[in-house]
Image 1: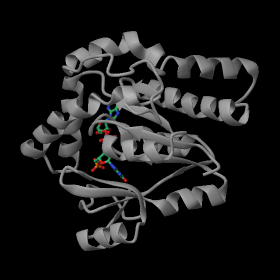
Image 2 (image 1 turned 90 degrees about the vertical axis):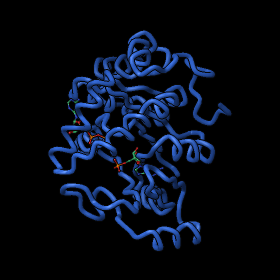
Image 3 (image 1 turned 120 degrees about the vertical axis):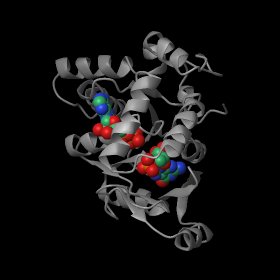
Length: 246
Ligand code: ADP
Ligand code: 5GP
């Protein structure tokens, strides 16, 4: 595609959807790929907005037609990104944002090594659990078994943090939103020379984005990884591995 492909991944409950919703309203010229899923809608989710909610046979027919750029089984349901999302974003001259899990990100990165990966982390396991509980309660669907499964999976997903170009610690939401906006602006500047404002603003954004790249975030990240029981310095940590063979 002609624009930039941004991939955002995170353990469930980290606040990725919240961040994505804010970015969608703040950043111009960025389309969001609405994924297909076989999981039922949650809370106030509507088909075509958060997801295209489809049946298993419908999803499998799309697989057979080669309609997906990537798809994966996440928590026992299918999730997939339609190739059409890339075609549409390209036709509209927009960048594209994918909110997908680590398996899907791996598939996309193999096909499109130029994609920019952002991994979102909650500040501590306790905060992650609290966010998952609050969300479930708010949606009237608190299920301890589902919660336990998501917490367990968080650790194995976090092990993949080093495969992404950037890591965001979603502690204070406004700061994380600012950092994500800075990443988009700086990547646009680096690739297409699009200036996000005056020189001082560019410098501010570059400093924010640099603080989230693997090298820039390493020291802040160490205690977070330790709390999740994940070793820092996975193969090639500190490098931009999108497109690599890690
Ligand atoms: P995800 O998409 O990663 O599964 P959500 O965006 O649904 O996570 O967020 C999980 C819960 O945490 C939601 O109730 C959301 O309002 C809350 N949340 C997200 N980010 C923050 C934050 N920075 N501070 C406090 N609560 C947050
Ligand atoms: P949720 O059900 O909480 O919305 O999402 C569960 C997980 O599925 C999240 O990690 C989310 O990023 C991931 N996901 C959402 N859409 C897609 C997709 O199209 N492909 C893949 N591989 N994962 C997705």
